Length: 166
Picture (cartoon, rainbow, N blue to C red):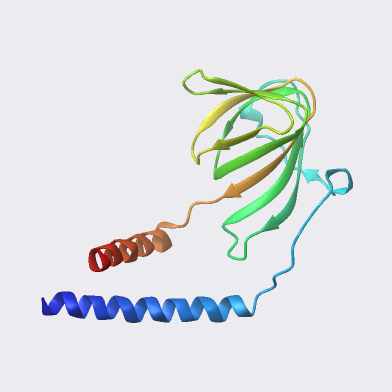
């Protein structure tokens, strides 16, 4: 019982200190918003790896729009010309099709035809085949996984909290 009370006290002190540190950090950061018009964006080359290309010679470009303060989440505009390629996601990705269309085939054979306004999510590590019949423009939100050294202690704190709080 005494160990549980001591563990609870340590957890409360650690959490209080962490919250105070986060608040102090957030008070000093920039809170300005970001927006961009695709037609006025300065795109840079972002080639698809040659071994991923199955058909065509895609010309692929992107532009970074914004990112979260910790850098774990980024927003990009991305466009490519007609082609077919495999894509393996290095981050969780949520896309919105802005112009053009794409047919995406999942590893299990499931196909999705996306047109302007459609939204899709691709988990980190997943691979699909993308068939782009004409120039495609998408908005992409990329959420990169936290390094294990950061992620594991956060999981432990959440588990400890649930054991103490209930």
